[in-house]
Length: 129
Image (cartoon, rainbow, N blue to C red; front, side):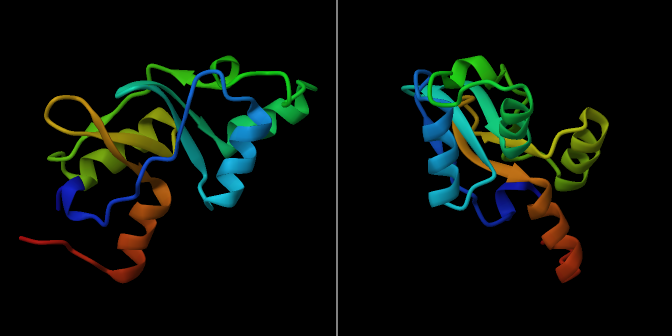
């Protein structure tokens, strides 16, 4: 099964200057566990729920701190034609739960999360042959 065969999870996108409070608010409103930090069509980084927990633990003021302070810059991406099982291995090896999906030109088109992969296992979905 290829990444493109999964139901697409759209990217929730914020600008680099977005406050972390607004990032958290958007994630909550859109029921998302991560956001992509982008300018136009260029992916700069990613912020996850786990990252936001660190903000609180470190005493950073989320109303003042911007997305660029917290984002994981230059995140690893996966192509839409990559095999899902290989992507799962990559996620485990890297210790990440979210990977942006890019098209053939390297433009972000969605997000793959560990929840998506677990959903495949729960359904017993072998995917297309």
